[in-house]
Image 1 (cartoon, rainbow, N blue to C red):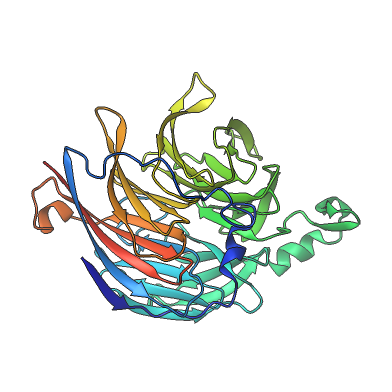
Image 2: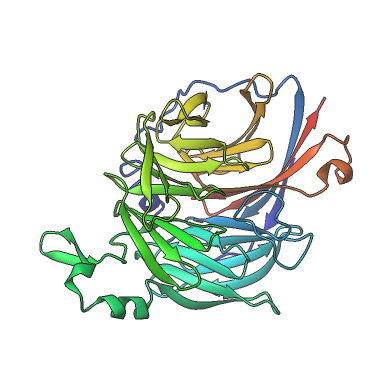
Length: 415
């Protein structure tokens, strides 16, 4: 059942293809029709129903990142506790607007103008306590927004690197790195679009960029602590586990794993995961951090699990069915959600006994690629959803290059 609902957002003037230039070499060159179908649409042991509250803005050329702040800290690390025990906040960003919505009733709460000259917003992340919001932008900078504990409203406070951090390092030649011939920049600055950011519980903010680097920032001090030459090509995605392990995915087809040993000041490379045949665009971690999902322009989602005897992680499965490049991934509870250049959202679930995955639902409706995804299990869904005690109800939010956010209600029942 599709139920169209209006949604408030602003027009973004950039061409949709811009956002994929680093991911797939200027478009979905690997996103061709004729992909191998995935698992059976419905597992024999589960039933699934999906309802789409379509939030449509036909005039919008693209909607970029989404982020969900879960006030109850039910599932994922980056959805942090704040004030309310029942409400959810959904964040979306375009080149011109940052918008905040109450996901429980699809009500717009706040709409803020984007910083002038910042360019397209690429990624959103929340501080552990929910008091700060970070947005990554095309101009190579990160904007920091504070959220009032009284009104709940946001205010732009600064950008990273801050002016103070820059001035402190400007006089010393050792603080400069060569970007290209006869051109140098401070090492604390990204030289290209910031493609992904992630805040963790230890008070650090991680950013990756098309300039091939990973940078580490202090949230409390708002300064850059570290810069790592992470990949041989543009870095498109980053996720951080609860134990501080950092995963970066790049157009060089590799996923790299980073950690900072106890007492060390710098992050170290501990593994390189090299199984994709084309650019890696999206990463997602299971709730306990034991399973990594990676999506690429080769139309596949690889499932990685820890194996200390085989270079940290090995591929234990491949999720196929999308007809174009994988652009986004999200995890919640027992499900994994994938979004693609084919405009389709797929919901997958793992069989804990057989360690195999079934495609529970294929949700269409977007006319262009699904650029961002958010998924969360609703609290008390088994008791309040009208089904048996084993029912699980999820909200899946998909942001597309067609300018729409679609909010899907997915209920999974164990038979």
